[in-house]
Amino acid sequence: MGKYFDMLMEDVRLREGLKSCMNCGVCTGVCPAAEFYNYDPRQIVNIVQTRDDDQIEELLRSDTIWFCGECMSCRPRCPRGNTPGYVIQALRTLSQKLGFFVESEKGRQQLALKRTIGENILRTGYCLVPKLIAPELHPEQGTVWRWIYDHDEEVYGRFTPVYNREGAGALRRIDDKSLDEIRRIFDVSGGTAMFETIERHSDRKAREMGYDGATQEYMMRTFTYNSDNEHD
Amino acid sequence: MRRATWSEYQKDIADDKYYYARSCIRQNFFPGSERAFLNILSKDLGKDILDDPAHSSCTGIGYHSDIVPLETIMTVVARQFSLMNEAGYENFVTSCITSFGIYTEVLATWEEFPETEEKTRENLYKATGREFTKPKSLAHTSDIIFHFRDLIADKAVRRLVNRATGEPLKVVEHIGCHYAKIFPKSGIGGSEFPYVLAGMVDSWGGECVDYPERRHCCGFGFRNYLVQANRGYSIANSHKKLESMAPYHPDFIVANCPGCTMFLDKWQYTIAEMDGRTYGENGHGIPVLTYEEMAGLVLGYDPWELGMQMHQVDVEPLLDKMGVDYDPSAKYLGRNGKYIGKPEAAVVNGCSQDFIYDIKV
Image 1 (cartoon, each protein chain N blue to C red):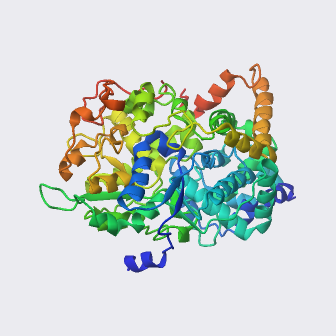
Image 2 (image 1 turned 45 degrees about the vertical axis):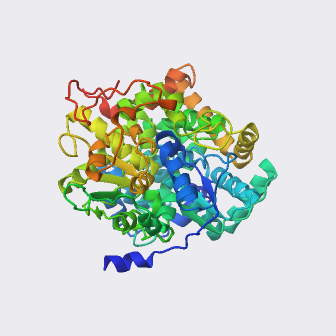
């Protein structure tokens, strides 16, 4: 009893985010994820404060912890000073460390996030760059974005002298020395280990699901598949 | 009553000598706004602001997608501070709201749990040989524009007023969640009654619209937009806000967060393509501006030099109301006036709905 709770308490966000919850439900009332999903942050906080290993493990393996958008609207509204969003961050981190995230559809999406945003950070020093936002994967970006995407050198050239080149300005290429520093920071502070953990467990799960490992096809499945869209 | 509440949440904002950190989303979607910020500060107001090529993303989108650990982002932040030290600056200014939330959270975490600061110092030294001192002040770029709003008003060539009627323009101000919901004391006006954008609108002659979902999130939700399968969350929350503000007939929306500005613009496009529903006048969308674009128009900047052609929702109806002189034929030109074609028409800009949007592609 309390094994997972103790592991969660190693994360300062859990210590900061969970004092004691009186189950008033204000967090759920203002939560954008609760607007959209069958989702109740109050219940998650309540389960964690029970310290019950079985219930917490069920959470760590579930879709439920992946619904939150981390907007933190819950934080200033809680009358007891809790932050359900921080509790979620601690749960997600532990779920990945233990490899439980691959047991849910939403959790498996972490591979897509690692391969897009994560790898882009190490490659460019930015979370995103224009060429990552391909119109085929982002139809909602609209007709103007397609025009920008197709004429990026010309459009960005009006606003920055260094598009994809070194120097000061928007969308500059970050120099190799700086990128090396970023990569070494990831190596020494656990970022690289987190990426490897996501890859390792995803590969295991992909094979279990009949794929030839965590292939591009498997990654795209995690990126696009939503079982709620399936209707009998 | 409300004003008294706002006044409880004030913060010191440095008057000069800023170290500037760019935003991943803004430099992609609003590079003209970042340039306008630097120009307003250095050229219009004569301030010293450094755009250092050695800085990087704070990695905040990765952190809030839970793939970048807390220890890692704290070390990336420490590197940014080290670069600021190296350049001889003390006032850190960030262009992004997610980053602003990250910097406030990291500084607060170091304060509350000093062992995390020690560990970060060790990590940074081990990875890069760098050391750092914390900034004397931390501000978001909208704080800086707010700070100089009266100076900008003194230099204004036009105000946020409908030229034909003389009435103040009706403005929806949308504050990014991570501006003040994580640390209310770090934002002007706090989380419930933020005054950072409303103060600009007041100073420049407009009128803010109060509406039920004024403080609701735009719906970015990090993994809820970044992963295609989850985007229903994102559009549903933008839809909720747009439906809530529509009865108040806003002339435009202004936001201080890169993601919010982009999503409130792009989801209007998607909703119009899916349902034919538009929220502005005459079958058009509501223009969505950054605060630099709003300040730039007030100061007389050319809208295409501000980058307003990169919006999906056309801004011309607003420019016409304000009496802005602009060259329609220059809107979609590339560098040095090169013609590069123009975007396809869209329902949100008054084009007829001739197909049903296929969300699955």
